Length: 163
Image 1: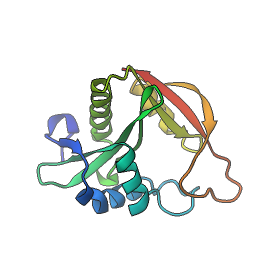
Image 2: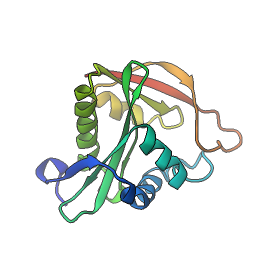
Image 3: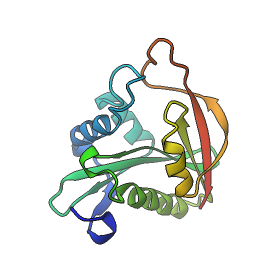
Image 4: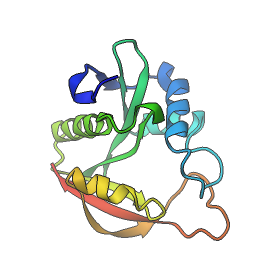
């Protein structure tokens, strides 16, 4: 596969039948989070997210699911999270395409800013999100869907971007 900018991808809202593939993709992308117990998502958690917000999925011309991002209305701003790209396709520009699509959709919903939260245990993500125009604005308590392994302290680093 070539760089994402040189290829054609479909980015669309995920639907119910996408859930098994999304669960597999998300869990593979977040497998690096060894400081947490269990998997990143499952049928129940993903179904709840899809009721609350929108999961945007990207697939290639063959219908292979390559990535996703979650968006929702969060207080007075847009929120995006759970950006996941298939590990075999990371580093090829798909995250940039997903973030741009999420921002466009949130802008279309009338939001002028977007919030993300990054676990402090994932400091390698901060420069990536800074590159996309996000800036740190504070911290907040981590509300996690799975337990943290003993001895690990987690909190969210809040980042914002004007749309």
